[in-house]
Amino acid sequence: MICKTAVVVGSAQCVFEDLAKLQALLPDRKDYIVFSVNFASMLPIKPNYIVGMHGAYIDTYKNIACIKAEEFGWIKNFYTVSSFGHADYVYKDLGGDGTSGRFAVDVALKLRFKKILLCGVPIDGTDRFYGDIKHDYAPLINYKEWTEQDNSKVRSFSGNTKKLLGEPTEAWLTGGKNE
Image 1: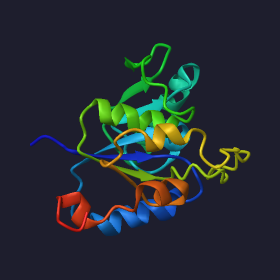
Image 2: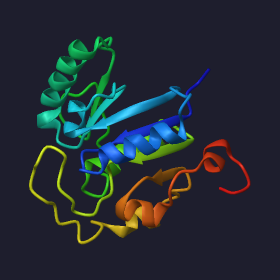
Image 3: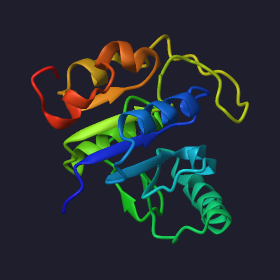
């Protein structure tokens, strides 16, 4: 069976609430691929891909995921993805909108995922769950990236991305009429 659903996990403070919403939406499903963005590799959710536009930090993100794998007993079978550097996969042609969250969406689209769910990727300037400084996204870095592309495959659980893309529903995930 080919997995058709990707979950992009960012590091905004809402990530914990978003992951709870994901669990409520997909209580019996584990057939999705997780794209862990930057320091989201610290979270207790097993990544399949560790994604970051910051190629210089990709090894740091991977090392954190390896520590979590040992802590939770996961098999360390994940890949690193960046827009430059020495990651397992480098997509120089994908720049996101200046955010690693959008870059992860673009990677998932390039890999032909049918549905992409965003957790902890509100793109609204909120703090990170690990206490980093706020980011000024004003309020979205580049609306063109989020509005001029076909984003029908992407939904978000929170923030500006939820307002712009809509929230994922069971009907949307299954291709029902009330998408």
